[in-house]
Length: 309
Image 1 (cartoon, rainbow, N blue to C red):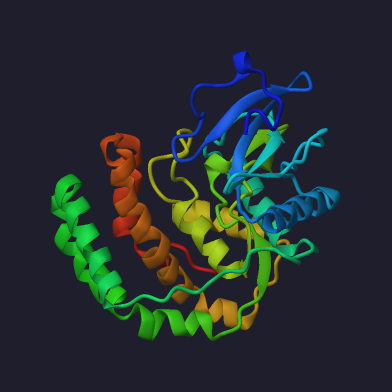
Image 2 (image 1 turned 90 degrees about the vertical axis):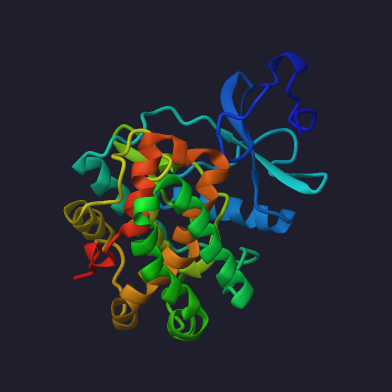
């Protein structure tokens, strides 16, 4: 990868600047940049690049792959890598103005007129009894070790929801034919850099053509995770109201989306929230007091905290 992007041996970083995935700060053409993995195959990476350029053309702040003498993005071995410019700015700190700007950006991403040819398509899960048992066992293991006082109350709610996911939660969302958009599917505070008070999306590489309601639900639940500048919790009701109001300046939600919002939230809590709670143990996040406080709030959250009306 370094050879492809012509990074001299003395300029190659020894480790990633991001804990959860390989992201390498480099210099190329006299400027600071990063090289990271993106979604493959090459056709999907090219589709993500077209999407990003289309966003920027509509004044939606996002990184775009650098224009280089070599192919970028590039398929190298069995991975696809991309070089982006280093975005100067400051991280999210949780102010009302920053929350408003983030909600506004998500709304403009969802409302943008962009190409979706070759963009990865969202795939609905296909769980069975074994995968449900795996999730319940994972919750028992992680909460039993790090938050045993919460184990009974969390499992009393999550276990029935997980058991009925394929018959009750999933069909309602899947069969509604909800409006889709090209979304980052990872719109969180740690993936934004605030430059001149406008947030820039800096990690777009999980992008998919997916139900926009699920992307909104992901932000409601996980926006503050992994961000050192965020408060150690999910949005409060008042913060969510600010975020949502800014989002809805650009997106008119359908009647079906509004009706299915509680189910969409539950869907994302079971699919992404459960995985986040369990996977956090693999990265020692439960040993970090800031992240642990967020994870406890996620595990016990009352979804009524995030109304659409």
